[in-house]
Length: 288
Image 1 (cartoon, rainbow, N blue to C red):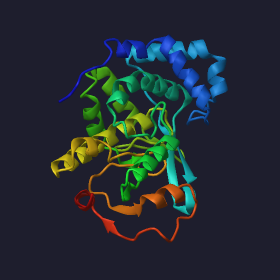
Image 2: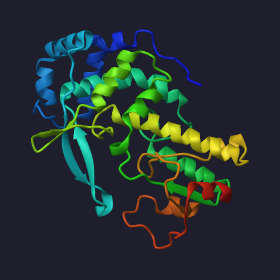
Image 3: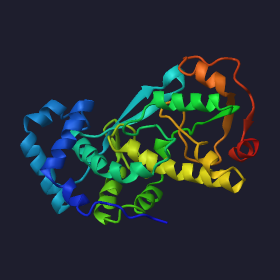
């Protein structure tokens, strides 16, 4: 059942120069390269009042149009291919950061307490500490579920529908849709973005967690359905932003001894002691 808990002035706050100014502070703190327009953070700041006022007007009268993101490729750790990033313009990052500032308090309290990736006040270290507590409690396995190209394959309509369970303001949902479909510029050519939420913008981690929360709830329900006590099931699924991302309940998984996970995590080359047993999530649930 949906729980409509949004702030009554959510869109109006987004259109305020006060909130947009806070959004700029967050963008400046995170630094980053220019988008397709070449405007740097310092350039934007040099005319900050005018830039924020222009954004406020465009958002209020619906003339705001997000620019395509600039495609950047960076190597993944361990030589495992390239990670695709999309760098929005500074002005688009300000809008995204402001939107995240307003939306995160609505969605984050409903995420799993065992989820640690890209969440305020949570870290990879806390995720490892949680795993260590599981080790000490006698759990025999850690299940690592890694979805290839997760951010690149987020379904736009499904994400918007999920957000609509807690946010009924169609203006906010429409704006998120505009951002998702703003396109990608590659070698001077704009490619339409029909799926995915490109990594590189302030809003994409929150959107990713909204998608992942649906899967975590699905896994929780399946654990309970298979006879695992609710309290135990609620402590079974946890994630951290470096080791795993979840988006499909049928993703192939690999089991490791918990001690191996704790001792070997962080090494660039994985140990040959890792187990070779592969199985589907449904088999893992029965095993657990």
